[in-house]
Every structure is written in C-alpha cells, then in structure tokens.
Image 1 (cartoon, rainbow, N blue to C red):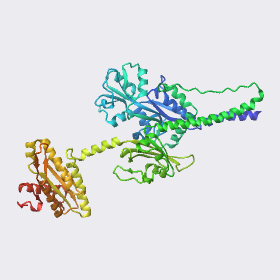
Image 2 (image 1 turned 45 degrees about the vertical axis):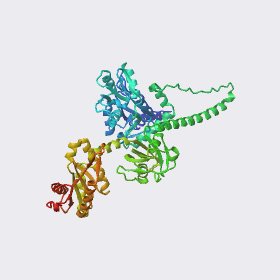
Image 3 (image 1 turned 60 degrees about the horizontal axis):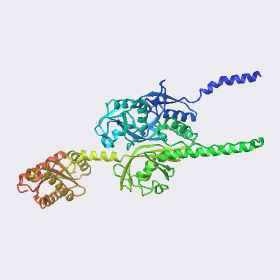
Image 4 (image 1 turned 180 degrees about the vertical axis):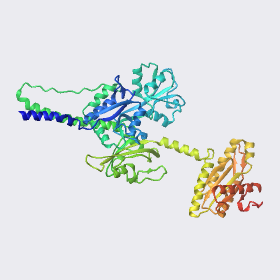
Length: 596
C-alpha cells in the first residue's frame, strides 16, 4: 500500500512537468472593430467569428492561441515582421501573398458602398469619382479603391466604426467595406440615416483566410488540418450560425434521428451492432460534408485556382480559373504544362516553356513561387489574359517531395493595360503615335553603344515640313494636325521594319536607320523626299495640300562621335537644305553646296 501511495504521489508531482512540456500558445491578434468577424469585448479581449474560428481550429489540433488587440495596420505589420505568428482574418490578395502564406479560404464575401439616405446620385462604381471615400487603413477595401483608381480623395481610418461615424456626420461621402461588416456596424451604432448604394461591388469579392508569416509551413499545415476537422465535426457551422446568421435567409434543415427502443434484454447485441454501423455512417457522412464544404470554398473563390499533380498532370480547376483560361473543364483535365496548346508569355512577350511555368517550378524545387506575372492566351477573348500567379507545393506527412501543387491566379489585365498606356504616353507623341524626343534620345544612346560594340554604322534623317507655318495660318491648327498624322503614315510605309521615326518637335521629325551607311541613307532620303513631293493631302472640301520636306542626313561615326553630335550634324544639314531652296537632301559633307 505504501508503494502504491508513493507511485501515485510521484505521478502527481511529475504531472505539472508534463503539462508544461507542450508547445507555447500561438501568438495572434485581432483588429479593433471589424464585426462580426473581429470585435473587442468589454474586458478588452478579442472576440468575433474569425477569432472563435481560429480558437476552435487550434484547439482541435491540441494547441492554444493568444490574441492581442490593435489597429489593423499595426497587427498586419507585426505579422509581417514576425512578432505575431498568425492572424485570423486576412483577405487574400496578390499584394499580400508577397508577405504572408494563407490557408484555404473559410468564407467569401462581397464588398459594398454605403452612403447617407439623402444621396441618390451614386448607383454605379463610376459615380464614385472625385468624392470622399472612407476605408479602413490597410484593409483590402483601401487596396481595391487605390488599385482601381476610383478616387484620389481617400480617407483611411483606424477602424470602420470611425469611418461610419464620419459618414453619418457628413465628413465623408461614402464608405467602401465588406457588406456584412457595414450592416453589422450600422445596426450596432444605430445609424438610421445610412443606406447601401452599391451591392455587390464588382471587383471587391474577398476570400478570407487565416494568414501566417511567410515560410511557416508547419503552422500553415496545422491550421489547414484544424479547419478540416472543425468543418467535419460541425463546429464551423455552429460558429457561422452564431455570428453570421444575418447572411442566411433559408431555414436550416433539421436532421432526423431514429429512436431505437426495445424492451428485451436480449436485444443488446443488436443495439451495439446498430451503434457500430451508425458510427461508421456518421464518419462517412462527415467526410462527405467536409469534401463538399471544401469543394464549395474552392469553386467560389474570387481568384482562379487549380491543382497539378507531381508528374505535371492537371487535376482540378475552379470556375474562375476556367473563365481566365477560356476553356471547359473537360479541356483542362488531363493536360500538362508541356501541352503545346498552352500559349504562355512573359511581360516582354517571349514564350515561357512548360517546364518553367510557376506550377512546375514549385513541383521541381519544393518551394513556393509567388507573384509570377505571365500572360495566357484566352481563345474566347482572342487575347492574352495577364495573371499574377502563386504556386504552393503540397507535401504528404514525412515526405520531402511535393505530391501536387496548388495554384492561384489573379486577373491583372486591367493593371497591365494601364501600365502599358502610361508607358506609351511616357515614350510616344500623343498626336502622331511616334516616339517622342525623350524616348528617341534614350534609344539613340543604346544604338550608339551597339555601334561601338559591333563596329556598325548608324544614319539618321532630320527632316522638316516646308512652309508648315503657312498651312497652319491658312487652314488652322486642326488641318495642321491632319497633315502631321498623314505624314506619319507615309513615314511608316516608307521606312524599313528595322528603322523607326520620332517626332522631334513641332513639324520636325527624326528617322533612325540601323546599320546604314551614308550612301545608303542618302538614297533612302531622296526616295522619301520624292514620295512626299508626289503625294497630296485631300481635305473634306476636296481641296488638296501639296507637301515638300527638307532632309538632313548624318552618319555615325562619319560625322559625329556621340548621339548628341549626330543630331546636331543632321540638324545643320537640314537647315542647309532649307536655306538652299527646300525640298532637297543635304549631308554635312555638302552643306556649303547651294545645289545640294
């Protein structure tokens, strides 16, 4: 008996040591006011759907989690810096994938625009231009408003409660937020004078996930597995009903339970057998529910997504992914990245081989590929769709090589088009579409460097429209612009594909001829001069304008040792041509010859 007492006492003494041997709680945080996902209770502790969902997820895996409370911008920065390990409510966007890793999304929501009741002008996103819009600082709604260039009058607040109070008091004109968050806050604050103006807001559908510090694969796997457990055991549905009941408009279906009654003691074995069968049926049913919920989340992601097997075979894709690729489900399944039907290009237009697709890189290296920018030809649109792609390799327990990769794709075609338009505006003349002076000088710098490297020659034309001021004075500047654009078309038809033209200023143009000697350039210049002299521009009243041009030709290194000197030499030759009577070609070698 004494030995037994000693053993029991020794075990009790050791128990606290074993209890403290487990891993420390996961460090997380909740934002100040994003109801019903994140709220702050009266005791300053964190609460809300996402907070309780993470608690349940972590506890299902035998771990604990602690929550700080702070402004969204600060806790997001703390996660990025590694002071926190995970956050419960983060909208997955391409911008954030550069800093965080994400679980599968646990809910997708649409954004909305909220205004005061007396505001009746705002019905479409286009109506938001120029007005004061309130958003949560660092929130995906702020990223959306800035990314889409909706307005330059953005008021970023520390919390959405501040934003809605400013809207109610007339300090701002609208608030962009997730619809559920807005409805909950309006009800909580008792703001009767605010209404929903646009819902859903196109482009602001958000997949909410748990986020971890980039590279924390172990914690990411734990959270993903914990999510699947609480979805299977019904905890997710209980929390959703508790916090998000405002979204549900359909009555919940009740499960029908069968009661087994017997008055015979001899039926115990039958009851045990029935319970055994029921338990297996329940496990199978929960597995099916789990699969269906993940299928629903996968299919309704705002981003395109697909799975690819380790051997490169494509396994599954969601609806958004099919829309991006412009193909059907059957056309996708079973193909590989090596399929020649894929047309995938880099930003510079060069083709990306199948082995270098982001999904194949993730499979071959076992490392995530984030933020890859590529274009995929969409046969339905008959154009390329530009995508921001992230590929995450997935591993089976105990294995070092991935068995598949999960790929997400965000459509950035509008952003790429905007960037191309801005680039075009920065390097091209708005009237003629030719290179502008700044772009010409940058290209000439590279051309001269190439000539030095390969011992090539480079020739240029500096040309000017004769008596162009008289055309403007007689017909007006609009006809003058027509003359310039008409002349531009003649240039593009006359020069070789390897050559290019630029508008140097006013009615002066420069044409650059790569690997062209002076004699070759003079012949081309004379041919161009004659074509323009033989050409007339017909106006709307059938009146015709006859044009002539004066051309100065200079060649590197014959006449100059730099691009600046080359332009100056061609310019002097052009003015010599004008001084000699116009409608002729001159070179620096014959500027003193009055006959040209």
